[in-house]
Image (tube, rainbow, N blue to C red; front, side):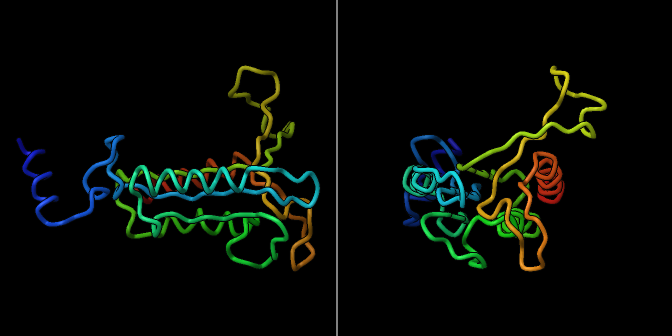
Length: 179
């Protein structure tokens, strides 16, 4: 009965359908997303990663009713300009993910989707495999490859990939802050 009253109230108030229902039963007002798609790597270009990220955005907006203001897209298509805050450089990816920690609009229990499509990497690391937490003898470091990987930043420092250890620590911070 309560659900019927809430639905009737939403319809009577003229709220858009996306506000109160979608075919997946998802409350779109509880979703946030960071979508990252990279085609234009300096070496080993990819095809379809940017379009995959845009398809995910379309699904979130058109099917789930998620507001575009709740979605951040970092896209690396042809001829990206380093320094542009919307390209998926290492600094931009980390900055956008850290912004989720301080975003006061994200409430406890909200869903946060981080979607990455691009190159990934795996490295063996003796440091991380001293006490294996996996079934294999060596626990590799898995990583997301940002657009500017294997280049030098403005200060002449090597730009590394974003390791699963970094992402795990970052996701833990987001979870603790937004819980």
